[in-house]
Image 1: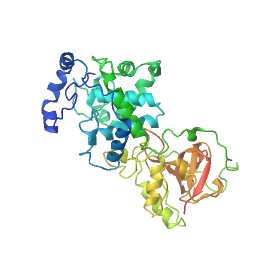
Image 2: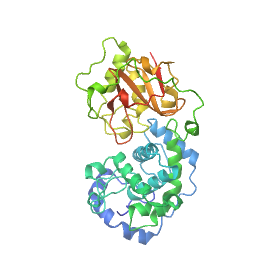
Image 3: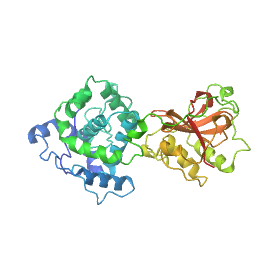
Length: 375
């Protein structure tokens, strides 16, 4: 993979110009960098707090026309892509440094744009090549998939956390311009910090503390079915014979029905779940946003994170679940890391984790830490 030299600094290229001259720009990248040396402004004086403000505005829906972040010519396009890279890193538990490396790499390779062209068959945010085993062209064009692939390769590099940003990025990319990544480290660090602040619970050390509370009393779920009667449930499908129980609370029925319409859509850590079928990865669902948006359809307001949803409504015994109850697993009872919605008949609907779709699973597969009734 080779980096794009065109667009270095503050040059703005229109979509038509990019489409018409993309291959010419890419093929001349090495020559341009050799002629000009490293970027004249190494972005060492970036105001991190100001970047965080601009990031928050754009991710909150601002147009980006009046935004100014040194090093970003198209912030309305680039920041959402940076958000996807950070969110994917968080979902894979990649440390902050790894996220910074990924952002710096994407800045150098594509200027944080999801390109449909590049050197030879290079594509996407990281200019990954289908011919080099990075995936199909369609997969590489998915920013989440491309980010996952970068992180997976990075985590396989022995001692990457002790390397410089450039060394680690080069170990993954094997670029013809191995020293070019360093120029983006300051901007990448500022972007990571600003974006991470927008994710509920990101970097919350309290979430990692040992549980100081008590787990629900043992005893399993003897008063409800465990879902084993449905057999294997293909991911993203509705088990044959399942219907929302007739005696379910009307609001729970509405929430369950809405959640079921998201079946098969891919998980996205930090995703809002406001358009899970759309092209923007951040419109997809994570576990807690699926619960929040499902109940929003029934005019029930839930907080955004698993850590806070476990305090919503009232506690109920896992042996006395009703359709619509939230159940929590992973982590601890005070700070669970996952939430799903009980559907009745021993089934749970959930957005499980990165690379997995919204799906229905049997209750027997859940190690329930807590259960809450929010109606």
